[in-house]
Image (cartoon, rainbow, N blue to C red; front, side, top):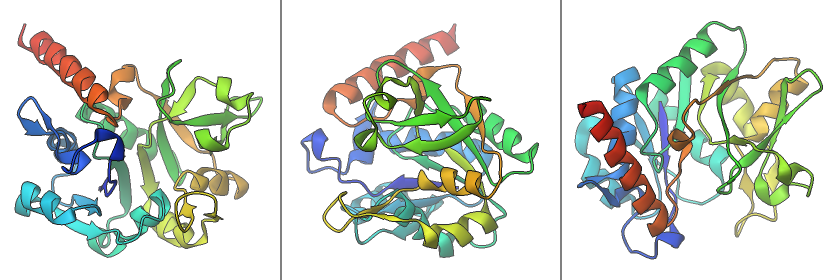
Length: 246
């Protein structure tokens, strides 16, 4: 399992790495790790970048680490974890800033992947507030065809309310074979970026079906990017814990 945690988090307006911002007294990435460990405790790989030493120190020896030295996009970040993942046959990818994601959801996504002979299964969320997520493009039959990042959407695509929170389950062999073939988006970042989302269209072009699972709780796809988001996540987590205690 790969957890992406290399982002700088400029909108947090803090010197602290984004994934280490506290949520009810714990770093937000700790909740992501809890969910991940419930599914696959043996091999968790955290991809670090900005102030990675702080993230390593905070998480300790319970996880493996890979480093993204250049900020070249999500596809590049996942590829940095290749050696640490080893010979795992299935690779789950998620983000370290999604503290409300549940272990049950990851387990259901994995089961969807296992029950279908396809290289990708992905989580989908429906929401009228996009929070910067890419849009899910489907054909007339409702099958996923592509993911278009918000910055590259047409005005019509921006009206789509099916969103990509960035949680995937991949066939490992297929993933490592195709990551080096991702196209560079030269207008993104300082040196361009490789989008992990482009793998969806690549799979479809090869004749594969990309299976998707709609989360029943849109808060699970909540990504923390600002102090306001952090406060919202903390309030939601408190409500969840109070409900579970009843």
